[in-house]
Length: 287
Ligand code: GUN
Image 1: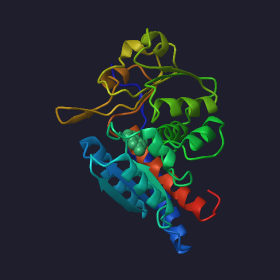
Image 2 (image 1 turned 135 degrees about the horizontal axis):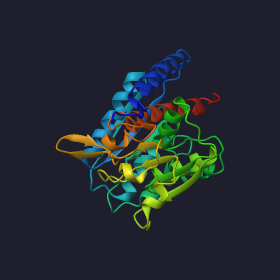
Image 3 (image 1 turned 180 degrees about the vertical axis):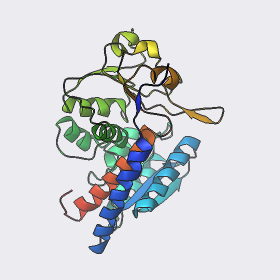
């Protein structure tokens, strides 16, 4: 059977968004506003190093100034807090992103809560999470925001749709569930303790999966014409694979994101969008 699913082309949409962001940055620069992002990387986790480098490259692409602060895996919590406090007070830095995960000896929540709420381009500060919860304009976490932009671009409405999200992380699953709920979806969040995953996926109009397990979602687990959003990034034999079995599912779903080239590039564009928003907020321009 031939593939029937339309590919949700995140790479292409991301290029379109970045072209428009580049124009926006050029206009800000005419008014002497230079959006800037500082990424804090603790340790040398290869995946984190690769993500951070991609973020810096994308900044360059649209004219955003970026810097990476590389810190030792052994940095103390107090030293890291001091570093963030320094960035909070640096007028030349608009957005601050602390790459996660952090080493185990550091309290991640404490670090995230220390970031200036107007520089919190990840949207992970409890203040901004609260605003997202209440559906008030704020910084929305980049991966869920990227997914929402992708669905919007392909005119996939969330109103009255049944959504199943597999993965309940603070970075993706939880914020995605709120954002989709705010758009009128009925959302189920499944996780490692969910007794019967299939019971949820089979009912869903839209299935989002992001737990880091190759082939977790198979064609027999979705209904005909479902929309499948694959947030997984797994490496096998030097190839990047998602969490969904693309070959099977693309013959049954109506839409599917490829990995790579789906959610990943959208995450980066959403981060750039948030960085420009932070520059505008700090220059008292309506974002
Ligand atoms: N690690 C994996 N995804 C993310 C993200 O969106 N933001 C941060 N800060 N760290 C991450």
